[in-house]
View: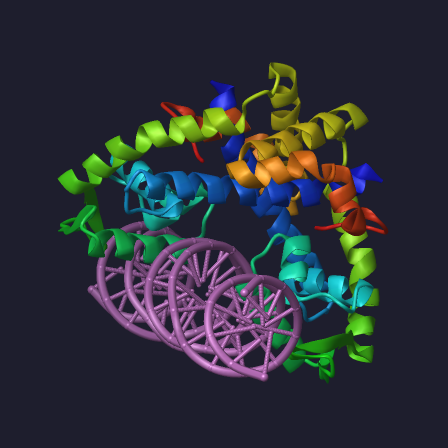
Length: 168
Length: 168
DNA sequence: TAAATTTTAATGATATATCATAATGATTGC
DNA sequence: GCAATCATTATGATATATCATTAAAATTTA
């Protein structure tokens, strides 16, 4: 019975957290969305990724990332120059303004997470992580699940993002 | 450290579940989105709600619900007639086609949930529910948190949706 | 090398999210 | 009963999600 409303609780919690996180970024006077920040952060840490690579890291698809990159360019938070060795791609790099934004956002994000997780025991957090990981793998399409099982452990796959801080 | 990636896991799990759920609905040959289904279901169960009421139940805002209702009308899954006692509102009712859709979706949704939660222990589910509820309240704006604490318990507030099945 | 295939990025179409606001109808207070 | 306020819906603007497709460039294969 309560089991039935887990996805309801999930949806509600993540929506509220997103609203909360964005409101605090806005309140800090920083002009960026959480999604833009996610992409900006990945570009800052890896300057040699394709849009599909970035998409995988932030759980978006290539089309969404393409549009977010276009916005980041328009807002001057990143720059792009053509890559000599591949005419399809460009070299993205975070501008000074982009760096300033990242620096400004960082403490807000840390504070958001701390506030959101206040009162949650280590045990609960651990169970949640396990449960969420299991839900994720349960919902993978068959062939992706195979790749997941035979190649890299999830921990290894996720390592790049886990270092430093993390996804919202 | 792992604590830092909880929202990352959350985001990933919910996104994968949404993709999975929608893919299974599509595969069943049913032409509706999960979000439209959520709203349709609420209208089916309560025919006297304002858009804001519906929005609260499905964790969306009024503007999103207005557009989803417009789509449901266009697709013939609901009908609307003006309410004599209130010129701003209309009486929404689920059409036969809408009912057929609800009936068709139901088993798919149940199966989706069962598959997604396979292998999760009752303990884990319980911890997750608790954790998600806490995250939700932690992220509420101060005055909403007060109302939440002094009026209805969360369980009471959510009861309408919890009965029968539940949100995605 | 030439052709076929694959990779990459961009974009159209549609749906949803969010904020703000407009427009109109209902209610309240005086 | 009128004015102010509030409730309700609709919609504009912008951002994101998803799928499909196009276009161009790179790589592989014959």
